[in-house]
Image (cartoon, rainbow, N blue to C red; front, side, top):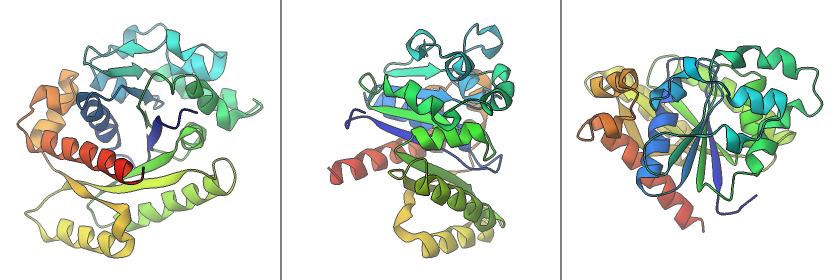
Length: 260
């Protein structure tokens, strides 16, 4: 694997925490910094695919063909129309992949082997996982250098976090001992209410340096952008949502530079 390439999977078994929003907008922000970036959609809902303007219903080939049929990912990757940003797309075909993979030898490493051939082309590979800790998510974690965990600032946040941390520990013990936690990202933060502030303070107390300084606010423009098939920076560069994801990308690049 190219040491200059980094694969980050965006994972949380809870839905509605901003996982796909983070995958799409972090990938777009890294690409905007002129870092060649590949967004890998392994969620059967295909929301990351449609979020960059690809018609998922019209796709003839997807990541399903890579995982199940051994197709060359280079032949399936699509240009998003945004500089430095490509996508390995997904759609509902992927829904049956987990059942088909169960009988396969090395089923947890299918994505890892497929992406190995791509690391020379991309500085960053961002994987959007399904909202469950299934075989597709395990494939993503096995393929990744690190896991970024989006966490909604809500009452049950800590409960959900303990589940994914347990899964990460299991992956580290067996399939991918080199994987680390990239960071915990606070999402859907509402500065007007006390609950969000209390949850954020509690998470920072418990996890300190693992929590990103960048915080993603609740933002109408951020919520609107996917329906237009655009990352937030191409939908409304002046929005708070765009500023927060660009800050996150800078923070990741800065951390990496500091770590050599």
